[in-house]
Image (tube, rainbow, N blue to C red):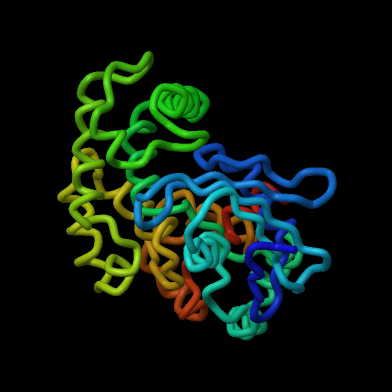
Length: 280
């Protein structure tokens, strides 16, 4: 018997989420196993430890059964990670007004936005990844996990004592220690951040060590469960040009105007644009 059962509202495919995770190295996961199982390891929202979960879905749109290694309620956090906090039928209503985006959704297997486990992990990844190629950054993260983690990224209390790690500069190590202290001080709460006006949330995130405009937007967009955060960055504009067969990437103003029809799911729509690039 499962420890927890998550009931999706509207279309949801765990397999689609798992495939997305398989191409998303910052997370601790296995992607989709041959039997459809997805395994995740992540720092709990309350920083009490690491959660290791096994997820299964017998049929698309059906309940997601969760086996949890350890104690504590991780249901709300898993719902945020998998986009299950929200009604998928409301997103389908948005897709019905945009045939191109709907085709991307179908091509990706009914993908919802899949998020980092927490703003804490996203912010730490941002510090590690700065000026490194992604494979290098993944290796550094794994060395940190091996040194002070518990099968996943270390909780803030342990990260605050981080010592030298191969491939990690002392400047980045100090930023990670400071990020751990910021998390323990409550400055990376996902629900507080997403409740703020976007500009205010970004301003707060930029107060943290090592978070410039791009990575602050990454944390808000990809780690808080916000459905309508929106940043007209270049890579998304180029993805839109390819998806909509435009002669060139739209300007920031034109892309912002285009995205109006995706409200209140602009974040989800932008994830589809990026995921659609991989599914071409």
